[in-house]
Image (cartoon, rainbow, N blue to C red; front, side):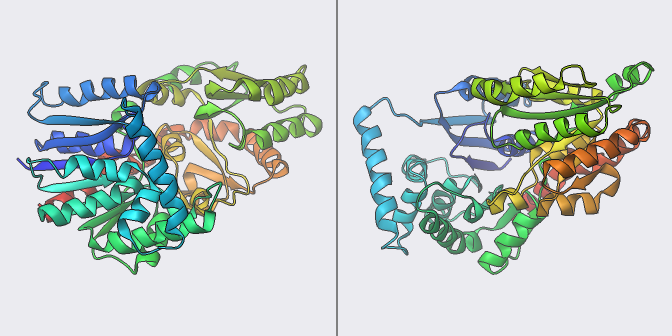
Length: 429
């Protein structure tokens, strides 16, 4: 039995990649400690449920799993004020003192020092540190040095390519400095997409041990039973689209999608499309966008259905009743959005859906690698309209090929991807 220490600036509910790695470690009978944050929002209750699920892996034996929570909003108000002021000052000063590790780590995320200050007092030294999120890179490296144990790091997003509202260039330089300083010292590095891997390796000058680990989920969460039932319903002649997110709101490509649907009603009146949006509906978005769309779709064969947010397993079980999964990004200046592969696109594939994806760099590469799983559209409402009409005309073939897509996507599942993690751990441990 080995002892693995997992670090995250989030919690279980907001870090599914970490949860999947912890599941693997527990299934391999390793002992796990997680240092994470209590975020004082909806995700805390969900994290408690996930903890219970993790404990069940080894028959509720708490010797296998220890979770240490840090309060993101400390009950000690003076401490909270101190942390906030320290982070703000660090952001201002880091532009002038650009090579101080601690200062840049604090400016990047105050939780970095909170994790380090707590963990360094730990007497139960792990065999391996597994760090997730940019804010854990500094404490992971410092603890690795302090304890003389290896650390690995998961690059889920390409943080230098993320757009920040203020001090954009300083934040980019700060993140690049931390990554170039500490990632080469990691025993191994994993990436959530091939392009995130490429950009990161180019930035840090390569790495001897690395792997792309896609955001797949367990095979058993997906089923085609509902597809079999639907296929018996010969009266259903519509093309069923689905899109999901935590929130149904602005800036997620839905505005352009709505324009595309209105465009179809003006040019192709015989097209029957049902769009289902799954997530928490933003009331402002409902007022400003959705109600207006519904007016324009009245007396047409196009319709929109809203569903409340679903838990992961319920969502995965539900998706197979649809035909097309929408992965939409429109003209984003955020480099990370252009090169990431979201949970969404992998989830659609695992459910057997045909994917309609806008042509970001990462999604373009994905569809090139798996052409049977979907097609690309340029990033405009006019092109989305044209593509949806094409898909409608091919709907019978799309529906008929669901089983073959479902089988092909098994290569993307976590059951397949976790082997890469296990091999990396075996090499290190």
